[in-house]
Amino acid sequence: MLSINVGPGVPRRYASGPTTAIDKRPVEIADVRDPGPKTGGLGSGLVGDEIGDQRHHGGRSQAVYAYAREDLDWWAAELGRRLPDGMFGENLTTIGVDCTTARVGEVWRVGSAVLRVEVPRIPCATFAGHMGVPGWVKRFSEVGRTGAYLSVVEPGRLRTGDEIHVERPAHDITLLLNFRAAMGDRDAAERVLDSGVLADEEQEWLARKVGRPLRQ
Image (cartoon, rainbow, N blue to C red; front, side):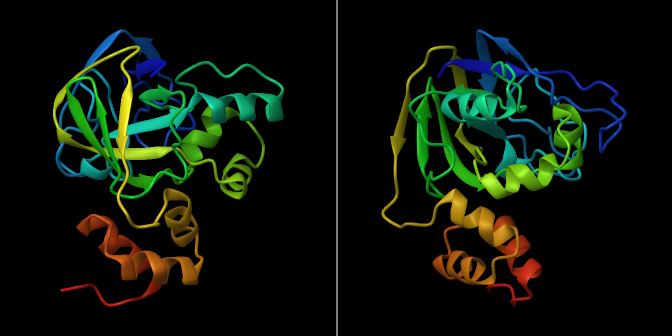
């Protein structure tokens, strides 16, 4: 792991909430914990990190956001600009770990914590405003280098340089497939829903989006 990144909530004209903490900075050590539900919970899974719009961001399934340095470098070449660790608002800047075709339910053991891969990042207006790139939401979506949101299975302490030990489940439902489902691909959505690998709240969200009855 190259970097651990946190940020305070600050007012920004492009923020979807009263503040945004998308502009994150590296720290050497951070504690992680389950932040609870999206609404009424602690927001971020990292102590010292904030979530400005808790209606749409943060909570148990989006406790920690990871993005690969390899994907940041790819975007840096595409955009012709430097992208420092934390630029995409990620809490963990990884290296050597695939954060887009990771499988839902994949377990990451890092430091003394255990994290679980849950959902892909869906780009939003705050992300677009932070990047300042015309058509950013569409461009990011078309490329599909989404990064990974993780829940906190076991709280613990992370240190910059900690190795990420990955345990992959046997199924083939990846974050990229889940992203396509969330973006309106009906076949992908049916496949993801039929697998039953999503956390309950994410299963319910996707089922509502495509108009399928909720599982009992």
